[in-house]
Image 1 (cartoon, rainbow, N blue to C red):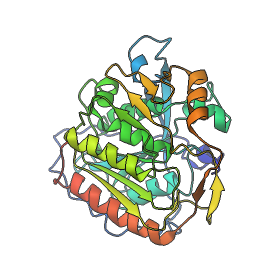
Image 2: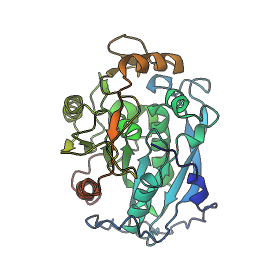
Image 3: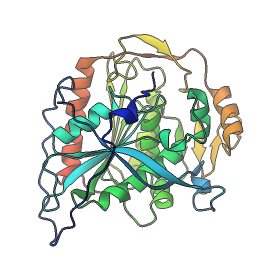
Amino acid sequence: MRFLHSFWGVLVPTFFALAIPLTGPAAADPVDLTTWPDRETLNGRRGALVTYPSHSPFTLWEVGKGETLDPPTDARAALFLPDNANADAPVPAVVLLHGAAGVLGSRELTYGAQFAEMGVAALVIDAFGARRDKATGFLQRLLEITETMALADAYSGLRFLDALPQVDGDRVALMGFSYGGMSTMLGAFAQTAEALSPDGKRFAAHVSFYGPCIARFDDTRATGAPVLLLAGSEDGIVDPERCGEIVEDLRAGGADADFVLYEGAYHQWDGSFAGPRTIGRNLAECELNVNAKGVVRDTFTLLPMSGPFLRKVILGVCSDADGYLIGRDDAIRDRSNRDVGAFLMRAFNGKNRQGG
């Protein structure tokens, strides 16, 4: 994977004034996500750079325990608004969480532009960019900037979108890729939502693209929003059996959860790299537990993931250097577009709307 260094260079440098509605919004209009715009011809649609208040807890245990353990952070994101978005007919939205390589033009920014073209707002979060004081290198970022920090930005982003008159805050989904997909799964559990969004605001749906299924909760209560996990059969970093266990946890907790496995697909089928090619370290054998207090513990060593050093030790023990295969596959991307489009249409248009 490759970090897109020019991410902020393609963003509109200033935000725009927001109109305040004088009357309540009209009934929500249904969205149609059956036909996705060609990603090669998006007419140069760009996102606007926005910032909003967030925070940086290392795990759920640190949330709300003061600025030393849970320091305030200015989240950074790209906001894509549809041309027809207005206070009289607010649109649904998707919050996107990037993978370990950071925000990619071929993936997060492309999805953001596609959603906007289809009438759905998108907030592409740059969790790494907001925390350059903590880490800048690839491995250092993965040790210092955690899934909980990305989720803090996501739930804070949900509140940011809810405050925009052009956006329907009850119809906002969370969608993540790889590292961000893992975060998206964690965000579907009630324990996460209650810690990071105590005001009760919840996502309307959760979509995980090829997120490693490595963390399970003792408290399996779900937020109630539907959850969709997507993975490829040739993706070595995703353990289908473990993903099935997490799906069952979510179902037991009250969520409508599904796992779709695309035969023949590699990791990052929606990326820019032709494949198959081997990259990274493989986390498929890692198994973490989150207890009722939010403490994350490795189930093999029983070490708590209480800081960057122990995180490095735990991931070093459970992962291997064999890596995993990635490879672009436009046919699989078309299939995942159809599946995600149908899933979000059900969530946004009334069916399976349980997470509000």
